[in-house]
Image (cartoon, rainbow, N blue to C red):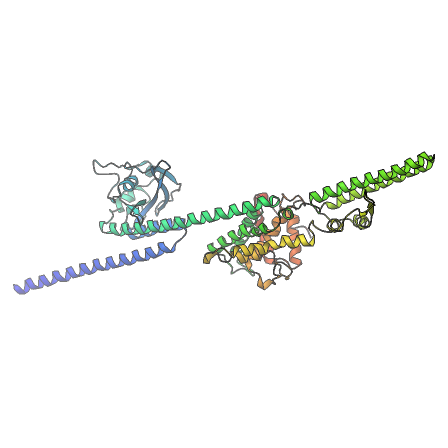
Length: 548
């Protein structure tokens, strides 16, 4: 008898040990899982992916068929709302749309947000009498779903303040089971195990801290991007001619980088830009011309070959020239008239009119040549001749019709900038770099200065400011170079040139490739992937290769 009792006692101890070991194993597995979830949450910096990770991991931990996330928001009046920010459902494809509702005890999620209590409800359609909250069945009815068991926990930050609500719906014996309709829900849905409540609460707290960090990072990034855009706006106020250029170049550059990442053949088949690299390109795009702050404003805004004040001086000078000519000839004509030499007077009048007309023609030539376009050979020869023509000032001093500096500017065969002015404009790249290297960039963004520094380099080494060769120019700078040139060609706000239509701009890009200035594959991707559609101007445009 004692032997039999001992055997039963021994068997009971063994069974108890097995149960304890099983519970310990489950607890260890859950704690390991919770640790892994915590690592995953802390590693994820993207706010939207973090929301998805929180819900996915919570549902995996509890075998929940569905789940929702709400974040607490405070109004300007100090009242609290709940924003529905994310949802998942294994059994139903449910359209998602954010909405805001008051954080009130009348709803299940609102009750948890206000009280901080965890609710573990076996059946939300059969709530205990006297509870303050209720369930709205209309949503289930509209999508043909049946919400039954529900585990709703508050999300608390490091200050123990409730920042959100995690709502898990319909626990299942196995994650493989689907419950697409109310009938299947009645068959398979089980209550949430009370043993997992503390695990889910712990996960929710980890999630709250991770979300807080994520939102802080996003807030800092928004602030920084706001400062960047404000800086660009300030620069564009100094150079309104190119207003919008930095934003368009940014959009084009990011679109071309994305297209490069999607290419599956050719030189860049294995190239894929990460999210951090795309952000780096974005900042480099916005700030690539920031160095214009170091260029004199009147040089930035120069529209013609002569500055407005210089042209005004020239016009006033020609008015003086004509008045001087007329005064000189009038004096001679009076002398001859008094001497009775009428024929000489008429001859002088003809000479005077001819010289005044010549001065008018010279001024017309100057005004015509002031426009930054290709000068016809005849006009160029006329300018050279004009450089040798002089007049006598009121005090009898011999002076040129045009100063050497004016002639140098007007005789420019291309563009509107003298060599000195061009070098000053080009110095903006070095100014940009000198400014950008002063910023303590994060590791993910430390390439911003180098990208901006290289966006005017050419493959043949004839770019500026460093004259880098092809292998020395980073890919991001090559991408930006293509986009910078395209926007400069097609910009509609440049008073010194007409905007090139799409087909002509692309042909010019291809000429740049032939001259070994631009990367041929990047230009090819730009055209074939219709990257130009990244800007509003060409949103619906279609480039067609010219017939050969």
